Length: 131
Image (cartoon, rainbow, N blue to C red; front, side):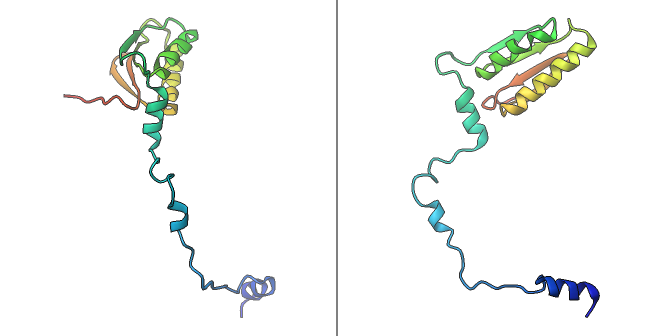
């Protein structure tokens, strides 16, 4: 017997315990919890969807990074946002795009570049296709 096996045996790490009882998984699924299950994107869509207003697209042209809360507010309300950062310096535009990407990721949405320095932020329930 090698030295490692002797140490493992001394520490009680060589013994494998076998269990005869199997675990019954059906007890956890019983009840109404299974019927109410929703994916994360469905929950996010319900959370961020505006019930009173119909879906709309908002075009925003931020001038400085301090305009980020406006973009976040519209996106969290379930609106699709087109963000044009052409009027910003390169450094601030990069920060704004990073913010928008984090916002879209955190709210289960997506961000797409649609032109140079123009981005589309789409909530989870909005499908974006190219033709």
